[in-house]
Image (cartoon, rainbow, N blue to C red; front, top):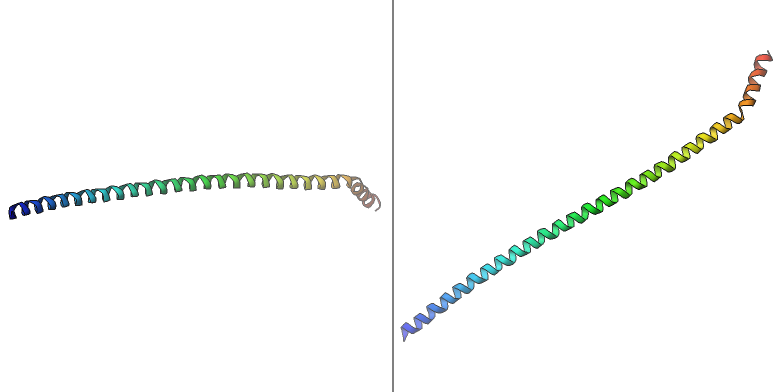
Length: 104
């Protein structure tokens, strides 16, 4: 009778030990899967950040190119206006010079 009880207790202890081992393995598996998911998520976030950064940089470069074109166009228009005013006053300047030189 006692031997049967002892054997039953030993069998239960063995089952309990096997259950503990299964639980430990499950915990390790869950931890491993969670770590992998975390690494994958972090990698995904980093990739999205790189893509957003590249997109922002490209937009900035395009905006800078547009602004550069606008500034160059404005400078060209200003230069053209100065040349036109200078050309319009060429006759007046020549007459002034002749008057000063001949008028002496």
